[in-house]
Length: 486
Image (cartoon, rainbow, N blue to C red; front, side, top):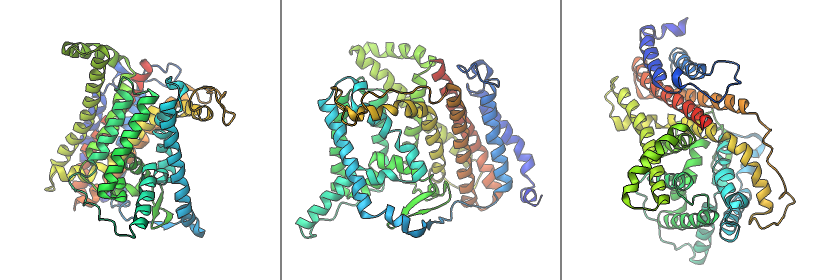
């Protein structure tokens, strides 16, 4: 009972939090009975309970945090190296060179197969590797093992190799890189992830192997230019889209590399050290909004709305393929804007509780709490694609050009669609969504205890964050349901 007496005013505030959060849940299509979760008629409990159950879990988590988490626990930055020199071996220079060489080799195979192989996407190595093995596969790897993409990053490997050779040739007399503009922050990374989402979800030829290969070459050229101007390390850490993207997820992991050694830290604590550079909020909005749009396009709502939007663009006199791209592009931009606007609305609410902080300040200090949400949006929406389509990478590795070769004897392999059942997938998706948003609440609450000098203000500020989390949760569940309807 001592913990409860720390916040004797909590009881009067819980009612407000409950009303606000349940109001968001009730307004969401995911929780409303008229738009309940569909497509899972074999579930052992009523479908509409999922939305309400998810909201209730977050509310209980909020109350538990307010009562049982009276001081920050994730901001200490505690870290200890792996025992026995294991961490130093993993982070050693030979291992880094080997991983970088593998990354460069895979990038080369993508470009080679895209330009020289079959134009049938399902028969070519490039689309499946880029959209499944690379884009989706590195997400769980980052969460489980830390920033592994940094070691395999082909652009970093090439940039460091070229820099080393150039320094040797010039005997160290290379000009200093330009100072990276602080205002630029993570905006190039946000633009890069948005461009990738556009290629995957909007572009008419986004699944074309040749288009993917050309896009890889263009992106490589821009990345090498950025590294030449601002330095390899600076560009990789702040501007290279995929490095920044996977690094955000890796901060959830218990593994972290420091000064040539790999060690352990508390789960989620890596996010507390995220520098709130300009462009971080837009980047998270792109990450959440693009996945939301992909889920939306799989359902009946978009299928009924898209023709109406396309008719608006038909008046521009463009080819049907271009008007369809504009329609999907509008949907993608709108989804990103909604994800951004919903978070900013929560920040406005947080500011209203007092403390004298500006909206931009609050937006920056709480943005790290969006990373678990971006993670579970991605994981829940694409887990089935990774499990099923990921099997095809092994097959295509033997026949990357789609011309009948069989380098490793696996070209005749087939996808086992019975490895996981549909109902199991649904439970996994719901669990991921709820757990991720609960993690976001934990991060926001922990940061609020640092930002505000009074626990009362810290908890009050989180009423709005609770509403934001429940809103994102219900949206995620509705998008999953919409995909099942489609």
